[in-house]
Amino acid sequence: MLTFKNFNIADWFSFYRIAAAPVLLVLAYFELREAFTWMLLISFSTDAIDGYLARTLKITSARGSQLDSMGDQITLLIGIVGLFVFELEFIKDKLPLLLVVFIPYFAQMIIAFVKYGKATAFHTYFAKLSAITQGIFILWTLFFGPVLWLFYGVIVIGVLETIEEITLIFMHDTWTKDVKGVYWALKKKRKGRKAKENRESR
Image (cartoon, rainbow, N blue to C red; front, side):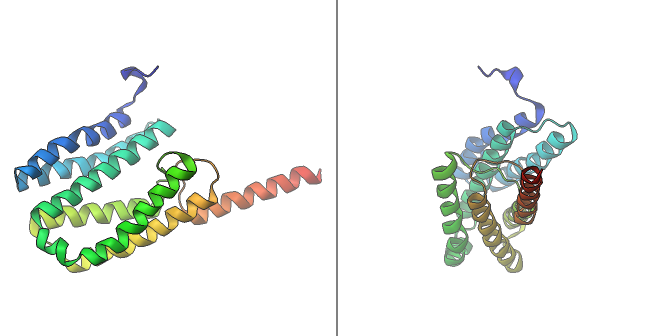
């Protein structure tokens, strides 16, 4: 049975992002753009903090990875809600391009749930880069207004990251956390094959 004592400080930062979501929705509903944006900035910041703490204090875990991924996804979703509320004309104009990103993204989530029964937590370098660019774009747009080159950068990086995520799902038969990327996954598989061949040749 889990108790509060079972969760570490990095987990609690992830919990904060999840708990902040309904508050952010209320701020968006009442169109309190400035308050919404500053609170969203705090939520995005906690993502970097909990990852740093988990690595530094060596308190990473499968549960923590899942919580982190859940907090990331919820925060991103809330950020997108904010764009629809406060920058609706821009979003409507760019909706076809946004679908280019979100259709593969939702497909990836479905594939993961079918195969693993839960969302992935690979936390690849590409995923981190994508999260950073998405956060910067959303916050910049809400603070100052949309910038096209940043928007297109988010689209390109998001599509590439989703393709890598789907590739990793097909490469791993069981749920795996903290995979740096396809290159590192292939490298690990090669090492595993060589180790198996060495054992069999003895």
